[in-house]
Amino acid sequence: MQNPTFDPINQPQHLNKETAAARQVEFAVLAIEAGHSDVAITLSGAAEEMLPGDPDVEISTSLRNAEKAVAELGRKAWIQVTNIERDWLKHRTEHLDARNDIRSR
Image (cartoon, rainbow, N blue to C red; front, side, top):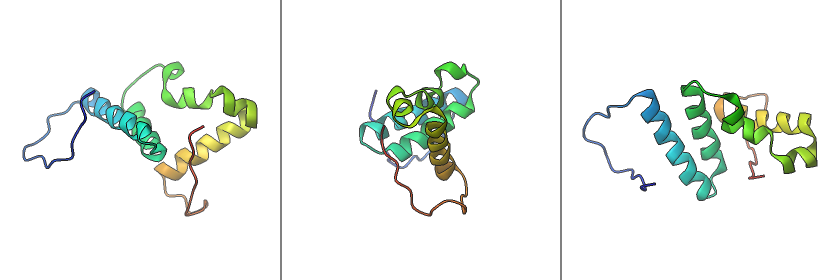
């Protein structure tokens, strides 16, 4: 993967859904490699929702099926954790704390 840059773009970007989703995934991979789980979760989730796909291979399904976390917390509790983190990152969440600790699991 070529390292993307944040240099100013002086011309329009011509994107389709597939290209935009692929760019989000590329940046999500860079973010996770750098230890920025919050950015990786947000970008990969956005890319996942842009295109039709098989739910069995989606990132959110893989995260929900994380064996170590399911064994430690139980499936129901683990899904609640992943949903809270996703919602906190993606939506206005006045009902949740203004601060959140997100860890790689």
